[in-house]
Each structure stands twice: as structure tokens, then as C-alpha cells.
Image (cartoon, helix red, strand yellow):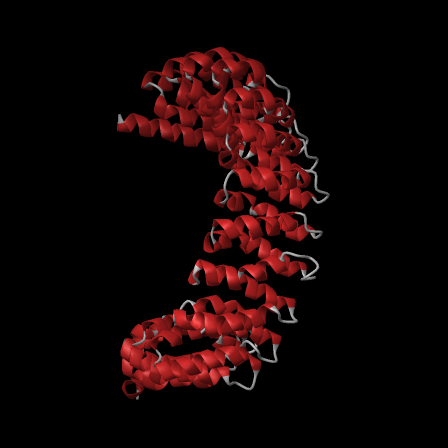
Length: 590
């Protein structure tokens, strides 16, 4: 009996598991579809497994989502591209379910399969599927169909192409806003497959209707396709059809929906190349200025975030004349999120404007944002300081911005202090050793005793980077002499930071300085009364073993570790024994 039932076993198991009440078991079963298909073979997969899946699609959304995803990569298991059409029925059904993310995944899988299908099969199987979905009585099928036209259209014969364009036009005028949203969202992809001669006569009227839709969610998705359509049209056609829409939408009086203007602000810079320099100067720059001064903070945030990309396309004089006055206003905007968005990109304006305009126009804005009361604004400026340094040079940067940096180094928000520390190595390389010692040297040691661990940790790493930048001799003069004072701090957490700094510096300073100056400090700390210090001593000594001479390891490190291995504290003993094992391994390898 077992021999007779053997070929049926995989499908029987699948049926049992898909009817199980446990959703996780059903989900696991769907995830194993490829394994089941391999066990069944290509023919039985086509004739038994796929029809079974087509009939059993009334399940939890999570299971249906997994099914839609699996079927998208199932072509090899049904016998290759020649039989890809057998995968369409279950996915067609999934395109009509209620849950949006299941439909989206089914559409994605259909697109993947359709892209591999032969032209004849697309005409015989895929295009009829698209037409059936577009004619669905329930809106879900019509929504899904919108995402498939760009796959179906290129392979269709001329008569079918006429029909497909007509159907898409009807979907754009559907009674359900959800369908019109889907049509507007996919218009750019569909337009990219339509012949140039039909773009102006059929696609652009559809676009015009969508931009005048009474639902703002449809209009904003139509705006989203502006850039894609603009790239398909000739510059003159783009000016005639796309530009008026964008300019009108940028006006508060002509479109009350801030969401539409938000989308315009995001798309505007992409249109500049499509329409050419003169329409950009005459129409798009004023539109952009209006968006920067919009009465909705969300629109100003979107516009401010794109200022560098927009200005990069323009003649350098246009930003100075039209955009910079707006940026000055935005630097003191009532919304902290607008100021933060501006701070995240404004440094990129320096290379665009050049040295003189940056010094005259941008520096005051930078300084204003550096002193902003909102920490994210200050943080965004600090993280991009290198962009302005490349333009105005270090002398001017140090004169104008360094006082503000010094102030931020003691900022009450630890993330701001952290950003300054991470910027210090770059600043050090640009300022040079003399200027750095005078202005910032003391700060670097001061951070080792910050109340926040992340700051202390970053400060220890910072010392290592500075030693690499300025060399061991500089570190010997400015860092090493302060180590004994710091290691005697009454707070054990600060003493731990110094031990961490020593382990990092040792790899930069070389054997002689480590043995003479750093190692004695570590060994002396092994007598500390706090167990955390003692086991950190063991960890530091373990990190030093590979870089020191064997004689130093045997005469100085091993005796200290042996003593720690007999400590009353279990953690101290553990790390001491770990370090002793490292010593033994070094001896064996040598």
C-alpha cells in the first residue's frame, strides 16, 4: 500500500497541512511549495499542485501573501517559460482579494512571470487576464489590473493595443477613487511602453483629467508621474502639458490640498532637465520659491529638503537671487522640523554657490542653525561641516565656525557632543597640529570624563585617531602625561574609560612607549578595589599580549594575571584565565 501511495504523499501532506487550524503550519507548508513541486515533478505540479492552489485560496492574508510570493518564482517548477501560463489562474484570484498587500504581491509576481513569457503566450493568456481583471465587478480586480498594463502592452498586436489604451482610459475615470489612484500611480510605467505618437493624443488627456480629479489622493499620484512623463515627452511638449500643471499646483489658491503641493515639492527638481533652462528660470524657480514659503510646514519641509538638488541644476546666479532669501527665512522658521530639513542639506549649497557667495550669504545661515535650540538642527549642520570646509578653507572656517563648535562640544544633548567628537579627527587633519593644540586639545581629554558612556567611548577612540593623525611623538607630549592623573579618578567608570583608551593607544604608540608609560599604569590598576576595573585590566593585558615582546609578557603581564586569577571575584578570575590562555597560545606559536 505504501508503494502505491508514494507519489501522492507530498500533495497529501500539503492538503493536510493547509487544512490545519494552526496558521504557522499552513504558512510553513506554503513556504515549502518549491520542495513539494520538486518531489512531484513538473507535470504533476502543473496538473495537480497549481489547480489545488487555485481552489484553496480562502485563507489568512499571511498565507495568501506567502503563496503570491512563492508563485512568482515558480516557472522552473512547472517546466519552464513554455508552461508559465499555468501560474496565472491562482495569481489572478489573489489579485481580487480584499487585503492590499496580498494583491500588490500577486501583481508583482504576475509582472515577474509576464516579463519572462513568450510574446504569443502573453497575447493568448496574459492580456485576457488583464482584461478580465479590468472588467471585474468588484474594485479590487480593477485596482490590480492597473499594475499589469505595462507588461501586457508591448507584446499586443495593434488592434489589442487600441483596446488596452481605451481600457486604461476607462480605469482612470472609474467611479471608485481607489481604482483611479491605482491608475494614476501606474500611469508613468504604462506611458513608457506607449508609442510616442499616442502619448500626446491619448495619454496626456488622461493625465490632465487625473490632475483635475476631485480627490486629492488621485491628484497627488498624478503629480508623482509628472517626472516620468516629462522624460518621455519632447521639451516643448513637456512645457505645454506638464509645466502648467506643476505651476498651478504650487499655488495655494489653485490647490487647497497641502499633500498635492508636498508631492510637487518632491518632484519639482526632476522636471528642470525635462523642460530646459528658460522655462525653469521663468516658471519653475518662482514655483519653487512659493513652495519654500508655503503656509504648511510639511510642504516647506519637502521643499527645503530638495534645495541642494534643485539649485544644482540652475545657473549659480539664480539661487543667489531667488532661493537664498527664502533659506534665510527658513533658518528661523517656526517649525523645528523645517529648520532640521534645511540643516540636513544646506551644506551642499556651498560647492554650488562658490567661495564668495558662501562666505557672504551662507555662513550667517550656518551660524544661525548651529545655535538653534533644537538639537537635531545642530546635529545636521555638524555632520556635514566637511562640505563647507572644501569651499571656504580652514582659516575662515576656524575663525567663523570654530567658536560655535567649541560651544557645542559642551552641549547639554549628548548626541550633539557625540557628533562633535566624531568630527574631531577630520577637523584635526584640516586645522593642523598647532591650531588644534591651542583650541581643541583640552576638550579631547575632558570628554573622557563625560557622564554619558557613548561619549566616553567615542572620546577614547578619538584619542587613537588623533595619535594616528599627529604621530606618537605628539601623543607622548599631549596625551600620555595626562593618563596617570585620569586613572586615579575616584569614579570607577572614568578609570575604566582610561583603560579602554590605553588598549587603543598601545596599538598606535609602539612597543617602547607602551612598555615604559602605559603598561605600568595598567598593572598598577590591577590592585584596584573595584572588580570591574580588575577584570578590565585582564582584558587590556590580553589585548597587549600580541604586540609586546615575549620577555615583557612573561616578566610583567603573566605575574599580574596569575595574581588576578586567584581573585575572590568570579568574573575577575574568568577574564584573567582567558588572558593567561592567550599568553600560552602566543608562547606555543612562537
